[in-house]
Amino acid sequence: MLIEEELLLSYGAAVEDLNTSDMIFQEGDTPREFYQIRKGRIKLSHYNEDGKELILAVLHDGFSVCELLLFIDKKYPVNAVAIEPTSIITLKKETFMKLLDENPPISRDINSFLSQRLYFKYIMLQNNTSLHPDTRIKGALEYHKSFSNDRSKFSFEVPFTRRELAAITGLRTETVVRCIKKLEKENYLKIIQRKIYV
Image (cartoon, rainbow, N blue to C red; front, side, top):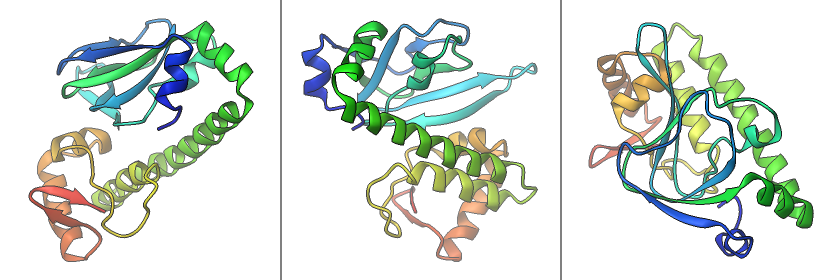
């Protein structure tokens, strides 16, 4: 968890329960709140000019949602939508900034978290330019595993479906299914009850 729930609540944060498909914010909205996921999953996506959805990230328990935009004067470039029943903690931007000012170690933790997220995002973007589907898939899986405390082999349960993985990598679902089977044979990942582990 990025910031302890008790600390957020002590600054007046609220807990909000969302249903599947509920929108937290949409592309073009002005960032006004800090969001942290208590339980559930949220996708960040963008629709291109052809109306095709590109999933940029799937966030889960403990992750914050587009917190970096609270530090700059820009609109959201993505939509944030719950993809299952989800509970989030929300805190007004001004109060969030006060929390950071009054808790320097938390501010440093967020800087470190943002730096790590950007680093692995660059790696994933590099992999997404590859013509090899398995390279794209590995890049996306490594990016999401990078936020897990346990980095041992097969310790991370991939928190999205093959279809979502296709939208993240810009591949067809059928291609992802074939590559996942190939990567399992190569012992890069494991499939247990249809769930992918890396």
